[in-house]
Amino acid sequence: MLVVNAILIGVTMKAILIALLFFSTFACKPETKVAKATENAKPANAKTSETIEGEHNPPIEKSEVKEGHWYCDMGTVHYSRAEKGDGKCPLCKMILHEKKTQK
Image (cartoon, rainbow, N blue to C red; front, side):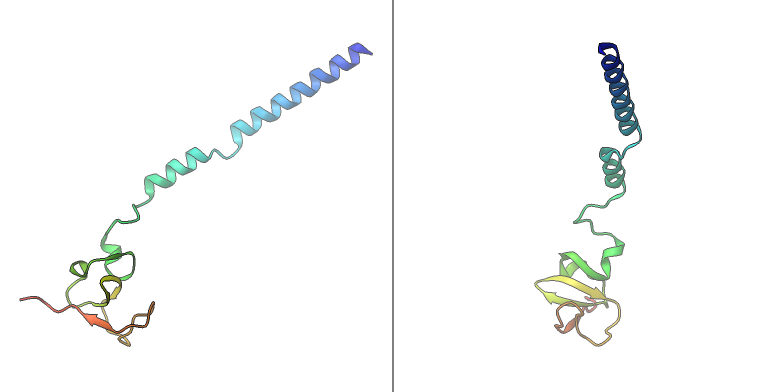
């Protein structure tokens, strides 16, 4: 009876070790995915050519709006676009202002 118990315990321990090795090898490793995601991610406050038109989150300064573009003036700019369209901000429904060329 003791021999049978010893064999069962040995088999159970091997099964547990195999399961642990399998999951540690093939399971999702969050640190790897996070590292890859942060390599490709842009900082939240990055201002690139992609953020010059459309919704700005975080808001940009008026000086960053392109000349001739229409923008929503709420102290800072949370929306801008190249065309006047209906003249209203789609986010807050305020009137859009045109950034005129400075002489």
